[in-house]
Length: 254
Image 1: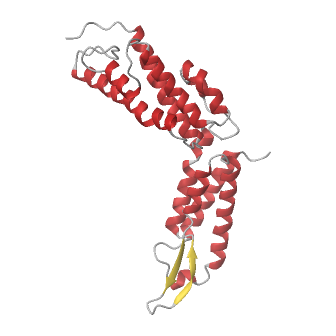
Image 2 (image 1 turned 60 degrees about the horizontal axis):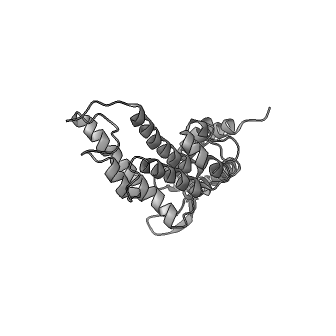
Image 3 (image 1 turned 120 degrees about the vertical axis):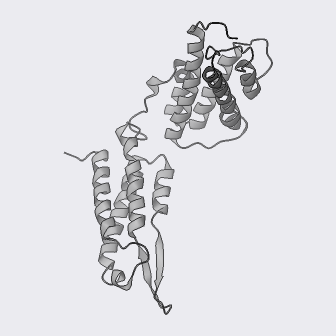
């Protein structure tokens, strides 16, 4: 039976930890250099296999492979007299960093975030976000999916003040302000409730200024499906808070 992607990753992580334990710490000594060529070759074979796993399983996001490769450093070693020896690679510390990088990819596989294979759990997002962004996400148009999601948030908020000509950040500031807000996300009776209202006001404002606007005004290259999904989750949360405010009958504040 063929080994699963997660199983291969776990095997790479275990092998990497064993190899890291055999590698010199800090600046290599002459004893470490003597006879260490064979072990370096074994470490390099492990590194190549790890790169192959990332390329095969996360091919649509080059960031993972680029970050992993950057951890494979090379060092020139000299003795006290300045005599140059061969270059040294795969130190203990660098091996551990590479192993930890692979370990951080486990959640992507375990949670079904494998790019190009298993879809992310879009079914859990707010229905409006699914409607405007799901197909764009599936087709790999990540920047457009994010833009449409936050345009939908902006359009929803506009329904609370249909006569207002405000948009984006300014609109959010007006609708969620503490004094006579058009939308009360909390009863606004206690300090904590007022803090929550104000905090979400800044979240709505920041989402318009820092997420929607750049993608609407500039040509943004977005290649990371995981980051895109996280943006969509934020848009979904904001809409669900609005849903909650529509169904809650808060007592008058003051």
